[in-house]
Amino acid sequence: MFSAEERDSIRDRLLANAEADETIVGAALTGSHAIGVGDRWSDTDIVLAVRGDLTAALNRWTSWLYDELDAQHHWDLQVGTSTIRVFLLPGWLEIDMTFAPETEFGPRGPQWRTIFGQPQPLEPFTGPDCNTLVGLVWHHALHAGICIRRRRWWQAEHWISAIRDHAITLACLRLGRPTAYAKGAHLLPDELTAPLETTLVRSLAEPELHRALSATITVVTAELERTDPALAARLRPMLAELLAEVGERLSPEKGIREG
Image (cartoon, rainbow, N blue to C red; front, side):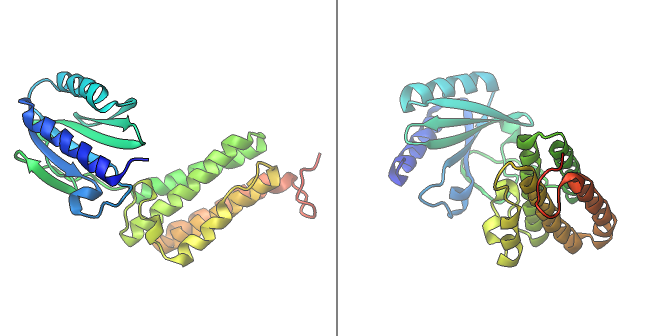
């Protein structure tokens, strides 16, 4: 795996190349390194302000990373008018390069450090919406139950795991922790994270999927009670009804499917 020295050297090369590129009128670091909390495994996040044709800059920089830095693969994430191009370099070094029109060059959150150029005042990115997360929870619970009854075990596991992800996001949102990609999960108190272990699907057997779904609903309902008790009171009996219907063909004594 890459060393911190290799990562920092490549970051310096990227910034030097930006300084030499006449179409790049601004550069900034984002992510953990922008605020001095990066560690041995942190990747590199750079935003470039592009004057003129964004596509031409993307193509030129992509060729440079393949030719000069031996990039192995890349993929894109579109954010408004900007393109985040994510590169994989040897040694599993990830480079996230955001190519933004110069009018869209500026911080949208606290993790930003300008290297050169003039940042623009931009609206911050909005966080996840609690109401939408709750909607996804009951949606996923419904479809997990349907998949169990249809005997689609892998799809059921997918929905159950997704509910757990949203439970983590809801807790992080309530406590003011980072919400994206479970970045705040390790900051949650043990009394919230310990019950999450019961939600892990240990096998694709039907009784186990039903157990994991039940445990996941219990955890997420407890979180809803902390954020919106009235909504939790409305959803709790419906979720209990869903679990009862899913498990109606399971033998309560043996935990196996009846014929």
